[in-house]
Amino acid sequence: MVGFGYDSHRIEKGRKLFLGGVLVDEEFGCIAHSDGDVVLHSLIDAILGALGLGDIGEHFPDSDVKYKDISSVSLLEKVLEKLKEANRKILNIDVTIIFELKKLSPYKQQIRMKIAELCGVDFQRVNVKAKTNEKMGFIGRGEGIASFCICQIE
Image 1 (cartoon, rainbow, N blue to C red):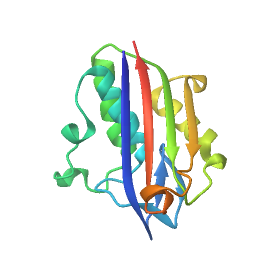
Image 2 (image 1 turned 180 degrees about the vertical axis):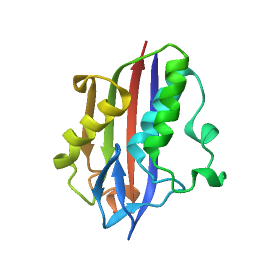
Image 3 (image 1 turned 90 degrees about the horizontal axis):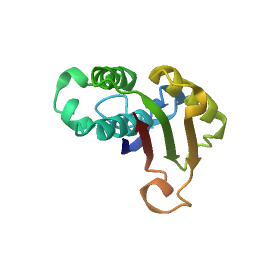
């Protein structure tokens, strides 16, 4: 079974930027109800999609105050419990991050290792790519960030 996830957020100065559970910037971060980790949000949606369980907003609505400023790591842990309850396991994860304001290549391996650790999978089963949007659109103008994720489970 395969699931696909996507997330995007606007960014602003004075917030922290978490990607895959890793702090990568303390100057610009996501405007979000939670910590705004687009990588983990896209991964959560990919896992939920593979399980046929809807999307992140259904499970953790931004209208619920208990999720205000919550760590996306905590949200992922709750989704991984659903994966375990379904007697499924992750075979592989592939993530693409699109961001214009900061070079992410120095963080890719750290993000990859953190995702592997959180999901309990071998490092080799996780791939992280970083791209720019070639100065096009809201990401290219430095207004936001996005992440795509595909996850295969069995």
